[in-house]
Image (cartoon, rainbow, N blue to C red; front, side, top):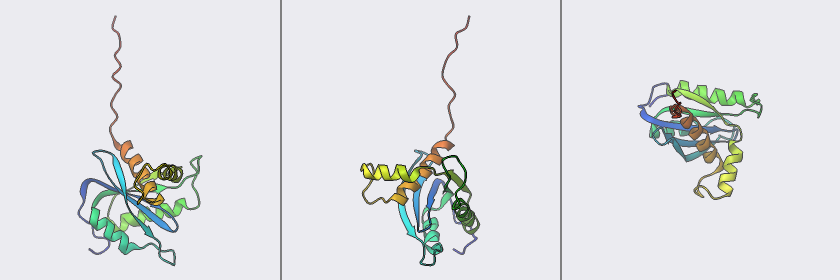
Length: 157
């Protein structure tokens, strides 16, 4: 399908991206369980450009309702110089595939992913970039769930 033409969308299916200078970790998740799983890590081309044909293949395969891109921020919430590149990547995804793009704070996701992988909490085939994408996407999915009001009761007099 040519770029700029929307792919069919599967309701409730989302792709999460951990965008990096050398690699892009990708996870797929869905809204019913708010869980995600790493599916692929794409390497940048030798010139540093994004491998758009590979991304097109992933988008066509999963047909997400929307995508979530991790946004690198300092611990105090201020942007890194690389934050602009992650936003640009998200905007390019939106323009190329006509998909809604959401940005998710990715502070400390790489640390959490490395800890999970070191502890053996996930598949040995999963790499750091895919696990980071899982954490980013799961965090966003969980924040989309409706909150239920407190069931505390008040005494009447």
